Length: 143
Image (cartoon, rainbow, N blue to C red; front, side, top):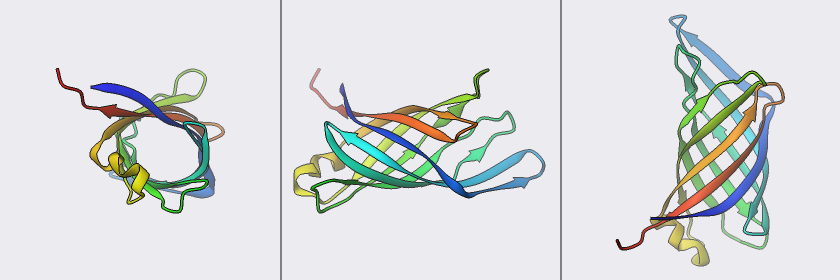
């Protein structure tokens, strides 16, 4: 496998559009929406997604993200899903997150994405709820 950075995202949760539900005083299910910008190999675009992450009793979130990327100059969107883990926060109030990502599109020039997996990693500020992340696409190669 060969890994390549596919895009970077600057994003954050939108206002008060989040909710949390406590179950059994130990399990928390949250919901949030986000929007931001994407830099896809120098091409600008916008990203929107929703997250429905459970939080374990030890404070670790398990992201469950579904979203859409719209690149400037592209008529067709790119849908994506990411599941992972979000650790922290550290002493500076920053969580680290990462997990596998899949893309779905019918845009002719990006059809190859439907045959790839990737990995997204990033940080989120607990205070500002702003995030930065980077997605890597994995290219299979013969051994």
